[in-house]
Length: 127
Image (cartoon, rainbow, N blue to C red; front, side, top):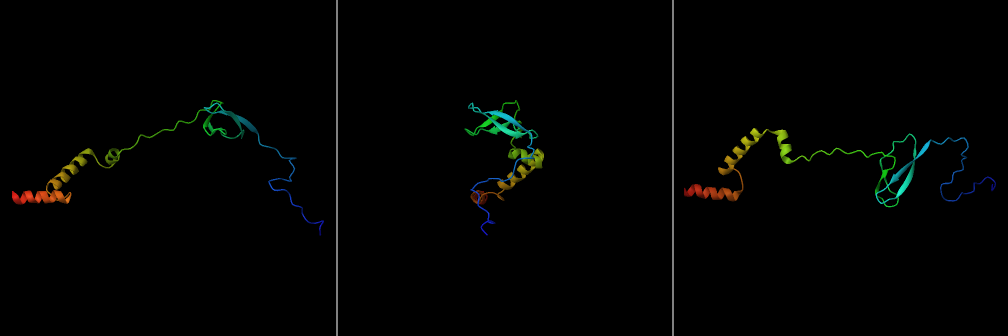
């Protein structure tokens, strides 16, 4: 029975497969340089799309490719204000009409804070 038992291998990822007959993918070395002067190379597949920016393994800062690949400039949309969003729903003429209507209601005491209504009611009774 002792002859058929498997002996344990040491801890870790040791492969018992042979590398004969295996064809490795074509590779290339891509160079990067960070703003702090650190230069390093990353091994990538020939078929891979080369990124313009890679994190520096020494300092963590974004390093630029030394092969002249430029990072894509992101198109930034201008910030939409509340006014812009309001104009998407209503025209300025409609807004002016609504404003006039609401001001009339406010001045008539029909809407607005309660303390304004009491003041207006006193004036109406006195007048």
